[in-house]
Amino acid sequence: MALAGKEIKLIIGCDCEPVGDPIGPAAFSRRGRRENWDLAVRSLRTLTERLKTAVPSEFAPKLTILLRSDTYMNDVFGDYAYCARASYEFFDGLRSEGHEIGWHPHLWRWLNDRWTAEVNDVSFMKDCFGRGFNCLSDYFQAKSVRTGWNFMSNEIMYTLESLGLQADFSAQPGIKFQEITQGYGCDWIGAPTDFYFPSRGDYRTRSATDAVHLLEMPITLTETPDLVRWIRPIADRFRKIQRVPSRYEPLNIAKNLMFNKAAFFEAVSKCNARGMSCILTSFHPSDLTHARLFSMDFFIINMKFLVSLCRKEGVRLIGMTATQAAEEFLVTNSQE
Figure 1 (cartoon, rainbow, N blue to C red):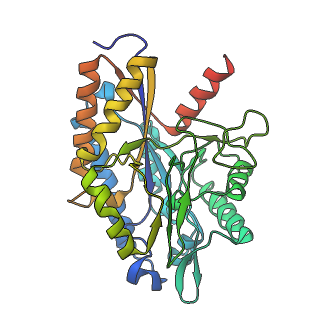
Figure 2 (tube, helix red, strand yellow):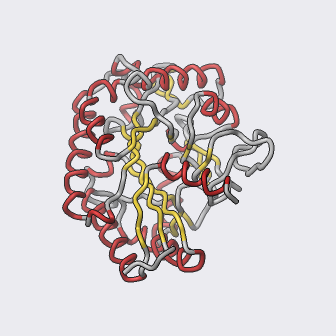
Figure 3 (cartoon, rainbow, N blue to C red):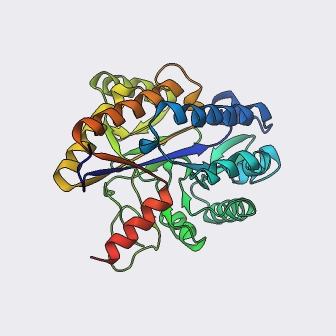
């Protein structure tokens, strides 16, 4: 039986977009494939149904489903909020079951006959985010967000704040990488590992005074297996990615359990020491369709392992949406 006061809050985000990124040969195509979106929806539908029977109801996770709505979606599918429009009934049904609908914008821009990550033109970034958010708001009032590639800048942080969003969980503390050909990447060197309000001078820095009014909720990190850490530089050279070396990587709930065990044990250890800890993780619908490092089966295996571990340690596992976690944090800290 769980001991009073020992709790792990589990927040799972789904970066919900059509299967297949505009990289490689797809970087040169502006034609959207409806079947890629249908595959994403079918995968999520199957996952949510499997979770109802695979995980006991008292441990059931709540998904924060972050729908794409951005310039790329408008160019390729003819509608910024194509995902919300095309599958509104499905997502509205998930919302009625206690899941959350949030927002997942990317900054792809069609330049010189290919898709390029636009991370420098502030005017484009503001327009992309502004139009994407407003179009999504015709269907769902998003309060939480995760950016594409986990990219962040001070200007983007200000834009998210101005749109009235409550929580962002793009941060991956200590992670920095840059893809050379198309320009996507992120820089979270020095960011805190727990919830914080970012400084207006540096989104990676905590501020108690001149802070952005948007709660940053960093993704949980897990230690990368040694073999993978040795192989990764070779893969990065092939993919033309420059990366700051790190022993850690963001936790993906749909990844093979061998990658995630360390993070689960660490969360229980923190819970035993403090009485409470959080696990923030994410996945893509495309992860559910794989059968190697990622799969729907791995999602279920990870959940079953975590439930078993919490039962063994007498810890309550509480599924929460991103907005619920943010609101609880705000209430708790206002009382201190």
